[in-house]
Amino acid sequence: KHAEYDDLLDKPLTQHDSNSLLETLYQAESLLMEEMPIIPISWKTKDYLVSSRVQNWPASLVLLRTYKYVHLQN
Image (cartoon, rainbow, N blue to C red; front, side):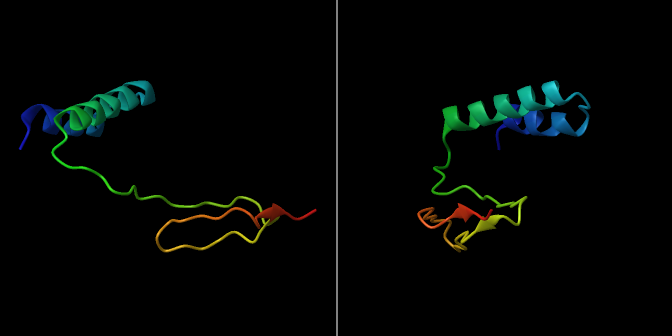
């Protein structure tokens, strides 16, 4: 347990200003990186395609992307 980190993570629950929220989350992430109790080996991501014109988008369970064949349909 880390009291300062826990306090920073509790703050966003009461913040309604997006700038304050982002600043608080930035502080929490900075503290986490400074203390480095863990070493991330990957980041969870999601892909959102907003155009049906995108063709040959590679699906990957391990998030390895090869964009060589990705193109936009006219």
